[in-house]
Image 1: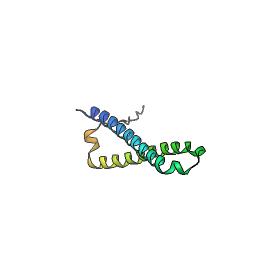
Image 2: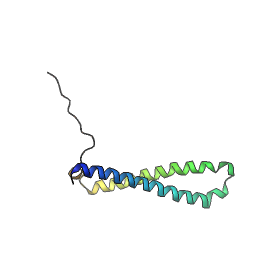
Image 3: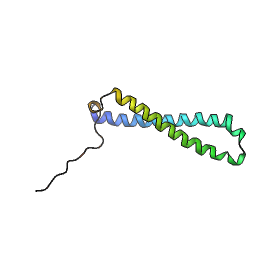
Image 4: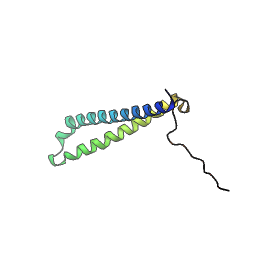
Length: 95
């Protein structure tokens, strides 16, 4: 495989990893909310819990993704296996 295919597969895999972490953390937080917190708050305030859980799941997935990416990038040589996403174009000066 060449660098472009490696880059595309890495982006797709990293995105899938991020979505899976978000969904798993949402379900874990939701189960915690239903079992321990929902019974202790009034019915009029229970809807806010889902919004807070959703935002917390996104934040958890962001931090787990960053930590996993930092660990992965410390172990592999990025320039050897992946193509750059953004190429700096040199500024051409006209005489």
